[in-house]
Amino acid sequence: MMILKNGKVLSYGVEEGLYDILIEDNKIKKVAKKIEIEGDVEVIDLNGMYVTPGLIDAHTHLGLKENGLGEFYSDHNEKGNPLSPQIRAIDAINPKDITFEEARNAGITCCATGPGSLNIVGGQYACIKTYGKIIDEMVLDPYFAMKVALGENPKKEYGMTRMGIASTLREFLRSCKRYSENSEKYDAKMEAMLPIMRGEKHLKIHSHRGDDIVTAIRICEEFGVKYTLDHVTCGTDVLDYLNTKKDIPLLIGPSLGSRGKMELLGKGFENAVKLAEGRDVCLITDSPVIPLQYLPVCVGLAISKGMPYRKALESVTINPARVMGVEARVGSIEEGKDADIVVWEKEPFITIQDPKYVVIDGKVIYKK
Image 1 (tube, rainbow, N blue to C red):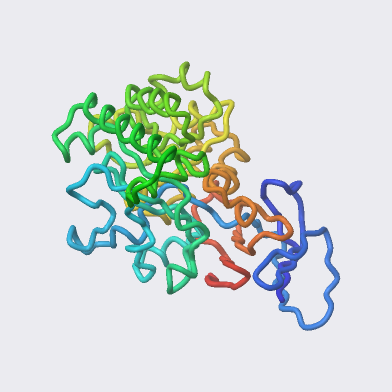
Image 2: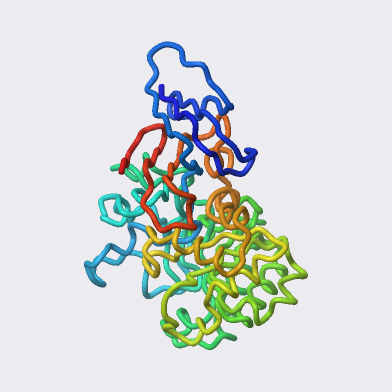
């Protein structure tokens, strides 16, 4: 049992102020202005330091594209087949990659990780914690979404036009619909798509350019499937249209770094702020495009360009938790949730800093 005393809590669901946080059996047992200490309890007095939920990134390739080891050690794209929904991220994630330690020491306690964007249908995305040795023990959901990609990446890999990519996706979804209605003969690819066709899980659609964003919406509405739009770096080109569909989750980024291809001409935190007006969004790194430990820096840059502080905080806490369907466990400092907590000496995101403490599942895994 552990208690964090006198911390200035910044979290969805909690009125800003000084609180004590009681942790028991890896969970947040109680959050209150004052908690009386009884029995054998480890006490950490925060003396007014800032406390946030563990940070969450809803789109990375953590552990699938190993750090600095070259193409042979990259396991995030199953090349050679544009339709590979049966591929599972958890079968290739390496928790020993150094990027896990770098991420959790920066306060990122949970993330989405999964296939890349070379294939039109790339496989099953997982939601995981960033601490652990065995991936099966780190998983919150081994398959919360199915990766789909439009635009330049599958276009280059398979020599297709945008028309061909859209047609291939549409015909595949049509086949999946037929299979979901009459699945007499087993098919691994079709079985993997059943949760999508039943509305239990969603498509996670790589879409940068404005026309690709509109194509994604058109096809998903045609088949009545749930989806998120991931990247949307040129989303402001179709902003008026997107603003008529504010129920679509937008996962925005990478907004930091160079523009390595034409699709990225609209990237930047100014555009991220415009896309976030009037709707909840997630800020993402697309790690390793932006190393995951720089997620707090991305939040700070969004704030500097005009994103309200609370909206920016929620873009890397409760919003990604909701997108991944794990908000009952992570994303805010509330009783009953996993004790994933980050303590900061100064106001987070405004000042570049390492955390003072990082707690995952009630265990202090980093201390400055």
